[in-house]
Amino acid sequence: MSETRIDFRKTKFLISAPDIAHLDQYLPGDTGVEIAFAGRSNAGKSSALNALTEQKNLARTSKTPGRTQLINVFELDENRRLVDLPGYGFAKVPLAMKNKWQKALGEYLQERACLSGVVVLMDIRHPLKDLDMQMIEWAVLSEIPVLALLTKSDKLAQNVKMKTVNAVRKELAEFGDWVKVEPFSSLKGTGKPKVLGILNEWCNPSWLTEAEQQAE
Image (cartoon, rainbow, N blue to C red; front, top):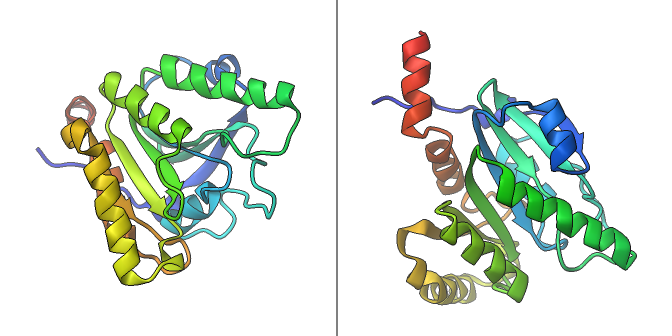
C-alpha cells in the first residue's frame, strides 16, 4: 500500500491552545494523525521543529528555556499535524504556572486519540532524566511509538556522540521496537533524513492511507 510522502517544508502554524479543552474546540472530533514533540525546556524542541521543516520561525525559539507555555499545533495537510507540547522540568517560572503546564501536557498525552507517535527530545549531553524516562515509559505502555531524539549532537566529538547514542540505545532496549534512538543537530542537520523518514512513517498509519485512497 502506497503511503503519502509528506513535504515537511510546507508545515504551517494552525493554532495554540492552553489545554485539551480548548484544543477540542479548535479541532473537534480528535481525527487524523498527530505527532507530538515533548522534552525538557532546554532540549532544543523549537530549534528541531524549525530545522526539520526548513523554516526559521515556524516554532518560536528563545534564549530563555521554557517559554513554550501553550500546546502549539502545526498543519502538514488536512489529516496530519505536528504538536509542540509545553516543555517540562527546567523552566524558571512560578510553581502554579509550571503545574498548569504539566496538567496540559498530561491531559493531551492521555486523552488525544489521534496521537500517532511521540518525539522525546533530550540534550545528548544530559539524556534520560527522570521526566524523560516517565514520558517514554508512558508512551510505550500506551502502545505509542517513541523517537528518542538526542539533540545538540554537534556539541560532542564523533566518538563521544556515538558512545552516548549506543549507551542510550542499550538503556532503552527493553522497550524493543517501540523506541528508536537517533542523534540530531539542528545546527548541522545531523540525523535529519532519518528523523523525517520516521515521521513520514508515523504520518501514514494503514487506516489513514486506506481512507485516503478510498476518497480519491
